[in-house]
Image (cartoon, rainbow, N blue to C red; front, side):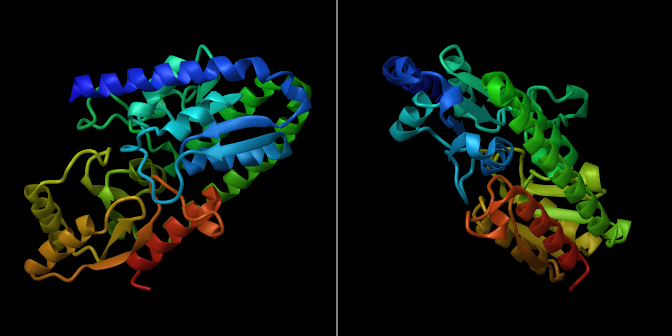
Length: 312
């Protein structure tokens, strides 16, 4: 399996380098045209569109419902990446195989991990994710503000003639995120501390739990590539029944059957737990919906969690 992954990465890299050789020559002066940006997950796309404004043309590789842990680059992706002026990705192994591709091509195209400048002492290191950090940093809005600052600085460095535009747009966006953080905190405060228990399909919400005072449990591990066993389902079901947790949640990018299995196991123990709604974890909602923005996604999540745990 490991050799197969390495072979796939090598092929992608070779195809990319070949494509690059025909594109790099034609880039020209980017100050006279919109910057071509490629992003991975929708949360990063949202940052770039807000800070870049009219100066950027953004292509997001991973749309609604796409799991970045399992994503594999297509031939079309390779061509899109080769034509980019700058690529933004999360890093911290969120994009799995794609991360290695980005590391290999950064000598040809400016490639930026938005998590790169975050103080590592602020990152979580779950024991089950040996040797790596939890990549789901957007669930703590204050950490995601640091990712936005990285995007701002990278665009200013790439296109210094329009630095004032990026600076002004970033100030507005960061002010909006500060307001969003306050909103999430105020909503969380509506739930009594003993009821702040969040059960989801995979262990993506630990930054959310730390920032806003929730105990978090996930059926699968940090990456959805890790399969949950029958023992995992039963252990989580016993925890839910013993704590009489009123609601558990499905995720838009993870099959619903994983949480339905937990619900059935809890019911077999004589306790009725409800599915409290769908949360957006590794992907945002449809572009034409409020959940298709980072702020809309975060507001949807906290409202759904609070209402379900309060029984509304």
